[in-house]
Image 1: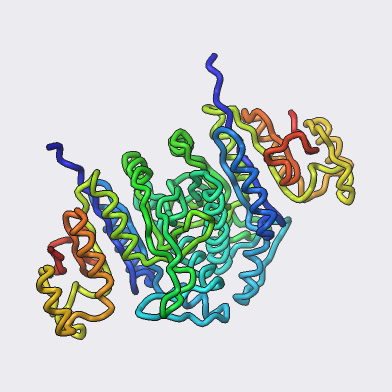
Image 2: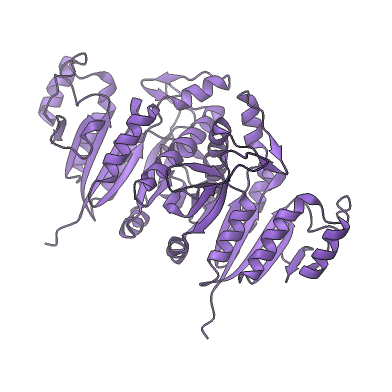
Length: 261
Length: 261
């Protein structure tokens, strides 16, 4: 059996996006990771700030943004414009050959507008497919794709899409060609037993433990969608999934949570 | 001598960017052009509108924008975010495989911050080099690059850059590999003898005629930088340069100005 090359897929999000100095350090560490890699970034608070300046009222339900038409313009401007291009320019200053992507670019992530349920999320997209052929072509050419959390429906409509899900779906799509390591980075040191105590990191979280902790309500509700992405990725062939602080990038000896089936 | 393949490079700008229906028609016509192609788009009035909503005062000198730090954020959001992604999503709905680019993406256009002269243009960039190798790789993979008017300095700084110049520089950079046809599209039917009279199109404008008309002041001052780009492109190996209305795209029998040395 021919062994597959390794790829590291890192999702960054939360406060680090809004902190230029911290972001620069994270990008420098990321740029030094050996081998193929992809970065997926969230939006931080910039979109909400811009929306407020424009007189819009950002609305979040269960941690997910309600995206009406004016808010879609705001997130496209912020995620695909300001943040994505700043990140790409900085990564390239660190010697990478990064190209920024929304899911519309190269038809790389096709999604469908979420059906109205009890909540109308507006122009929110759920991922349908990832153009893994294009990604493979880019990666072979030593290009580092940098994804923001915008996708499209293939009919010209842009859609706001969860960045954790994008990272998970890209990871799954690349499993035929790569041994994929997926790393979710955020403010905390990992999945915590006690949300208030950053020292309470669960070092290994397997499915059984997750079920147990979910039942007792010990897992913070905001972590549930992220953890579901993690387990789905592992079930679909991603080799390794870890969750931890941004300082984990390039330094996997630091404390974190390893997700296991 | 092996003949080179043809590439069509189209710059669109002006009012069409702000008119969703007209833009859609232009993109449909562009999507149908046979063979390799690249689109470069200007920013329309969207950036100024957004700036005004945010309490900034857009300032233009000689048709060029003064780009201080807050205005740079606005143009990056608008050009590289909103406009570029809407255009890419629409072109891909028309069956292309477009990827949106700022010059930072893939280090494709390196520029340098303009020196302060009598006017301080702020974060305005003048093109230094085009990464033609990457463009060639993309074009061979049937990717259609869509450029906005943002570049970078290679040290992490984004810069606002004239879209006409970007179109010209990309055209010149591809001359070793392609027979390049460069088409500047805008509101007018071409270069006009009388700016007020849209029927006064100069069908062929060569260097001698241009010199003569420049001396008499017949050429509208706003056309001078665009025309300088045109002549430079021809001098540096671009095969054909035309200027005309957006309706020219895919319909070269319609009236326009052909620039000749």
